[in-house]
Image 1 (cartoon, each protein chain N blue to C red):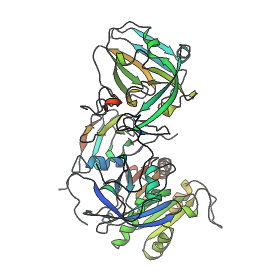
Image 2 (image 1 turned 90 degrees about the horizontal axis):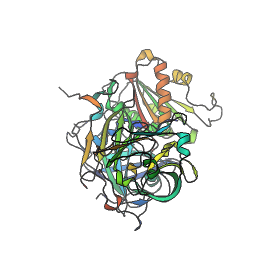
Image 3 (image 1 turned 60 degrees about the vertical axis):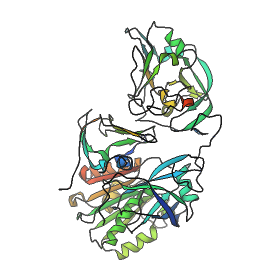
Length: 198
Length: 248
Length: 88
């Protein structure tokens, strides 16, 4: 632990409702590993591919026609900020997965711009995950992952891939962008699984 | 100039020894850093602040001063909503301590042994590392010709204005030209505008002189100026840039 | 809109924690497009869970640095080599 600086408080504050090591924030920090992808809605496509090659595809219009839900969830970023009570509108992954047959246990999620993240398939089902396209009553802004992003609030926010493009179902786990750079393979904020080996 | 330590860098403790208001939103902190190995003009430090509840965060700041034993000066511009600059500009007092790592950055540096004329182009608080180059030049008595083009919003936002005026008078071979983007002083011959190719061409060095160019400021400013310099014939390898992202 | 990146110079401090030399003045070749340049000239995204340096030509990832409490991970897959100047 470093030298404590008198008079410095930082923006975040601690709260017992938060996972260990997190600080509450009122704003919505924008974090990104690269340039913000600009995706034309005419060319946007969401893909779901199984381990056998079976594919489902939705254009933007087709995607918006799917049944959606509005949910209020808490966000926890591995960089220590948490934002509580955020409201999103999106399509549950359960609805997308209904369109395919799969024995896969893992998913690798791909974003426009090249970002990837991996999750066990069981963390995407049973109302735990959405492809979200509206935040706080408005269309999701590009810097927060618009047109659409994955939202998996029970894991650290790096698993909620922005600018989602494709969900690939796999028989074996394939660590994604941050998971191959030192971050934890699973990322449960309540067990403080930030780094590989935690 | 001491040989810089050839070991991995660690965090050191810096104590605030003095505070000087530069403009309404910028302040210089004079720090004492025990064991400071010295630094090159243009280098920067990483500053780490830790709050009582354990929250900690880091930012990078350019060193403003010439090397002077264990003294290091940082000039910090308040950034809207910036949590670190809010502390450094608004709250820091003499005696306060925080952690510092450095000096770092061998790319955006000027060494007195380099004899080519120097063009410095600063946007707002981008003046800071360029000022350390001007101060080092004076400290060693260098006669290498320096031209500074300093783009600011309005006269009150220019940092080091008095010192620059004095140095133009006393340090042989330093010229300073201002460009005002929002409001110019009374009688200024140019209307407020972004720094243009024409103004930079007139206030800077011609490309044939092959100056070493250092451009520092916000990302958009740096990119626009670098493009102007390349278009004016300066070789890209002669242009070094330091972009300040949207930090705070 | 200019995307929010800074210069590779920003990597100087974090990399000096790992290496006894200044890696930002090393030259590298991008695996993606072959462009050569100094690490200091890369576009660095520092508002992320780690530092990501991208090629200023093609945006491919050159290197990634994640700093944990007692470890750091450095991935250099995006450069085919790094050439370091060494005093004679």
